[in-house]
Length: 229
Image 1 (tube, one colour):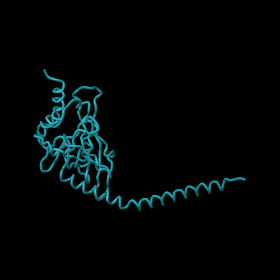
Image 2: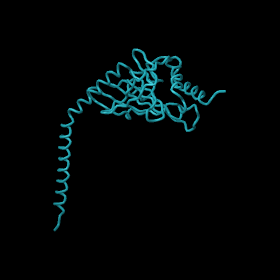
Image 3: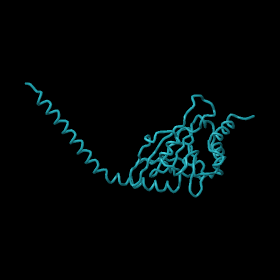
Image 4: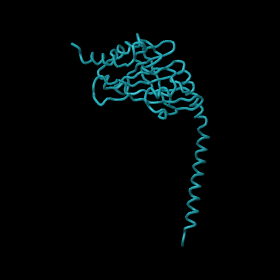
């Protein structure tokens, strides 16, 4: 007899959406190829390019774009197990994807269940003991999770994690070359921001004082012209 958990694993495996021609091809996740530019990813995901946000602008442009797959209103088990994907770009090139799976679609699945399902597409996984993966480009913030399993080659790395604070699975996938460049750029961007922070604060206060004086002068002139004792 097929158990509910086995059925869920089978459905999850089938819904990875990666064609067999791409089996064990780590240069992409589903339809999204590392190195794709932002307009191409936005078009493929059917989201507006303008929804991308700029995280850092120098020494390299680091941008992020979030995608939530189209949801069916029904609760059919065939619905996409991906809840959302956060795309990260280095100078316009896709270098990392953070995939969050829908807790409702993975409820009850064990680590082995997930590894088995994903391995049908990406091959044999390794179990790196104690390894952590960080995946945030935001200034002064780093999201870190323990790696449950890893699929990688010389150019790309796929890292399955189980959230330490929510009942959900996710996967961090990235181009090793572009990710290394992006990390260096983020470190330098943060260094520059911290160095220039005092001067920016002085300029902010100066601008605020000028705006206050202009507002007060406008009010003074209006009140002077209209004042009657």
